[in-house]
Image 1: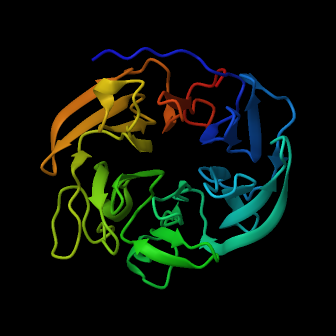
Image 2: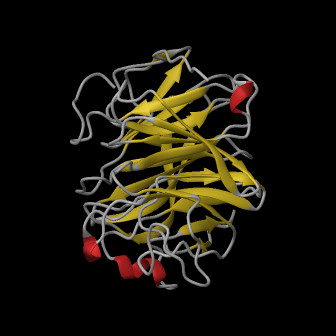
Length: 316
């Protein structure tokens, strides 16, 4: 099926994540350390907030999310000076134009030039879920004492617990149902003599996605084998969304994955736990694609990432 795209806003610098607010305002994180506000369909010049980030190639200000219970609670995942990755909570002003730091909720998540993870989302249970990377130390992904290489569940009191393990570097996840997630993961780029095999996984609480013990379509008891991998080139996946809207009824129930190096969107349709349809949209049309998210009205928003040192920089 054909999809049509139009530009919503330009002039952003490495837009990484969206947060949709009641009334139509939208927050956008910029990886260099700013949260920007779209209000009345226009990008305001003054940032909502600016944070100092630690030196990192892939890190910086990454995922953002607002609490479904209280939209004044804005959560950020960022690479702080040190460097270390942190989950912070900020208080958002009623007009959405400014915010103040409330507290650091989770600190001490290992950081590196690469593999910082960064996606955060509220789940159906009201808890905040945080995807982390292995920070270039693969053994951390299987270490139950490490916060790296995991999907963390952070309860309302701020306690973080490991929900999924065996992750190399996830930048996207969403829910198929209240207990089942879709998790994308970046395949290796030379470490341990391995390369390629970016993944889309289906997982539940306590599952182990296998990194670094297995990768690609390898199997091992007690570890998850992906739905699909890409063996011949690097995708790698940015955001992922399970489409539940009505604005594009043909996509309802589909898994949509944005890709960076491959510069395209992948649509996967599942039946009986298997991929029965795989379509690709916008091949090399807009450059590197980072975030993909569904708006409250059911449209899809996608961010480009062409000024992140790996693309051909133009207006984002």
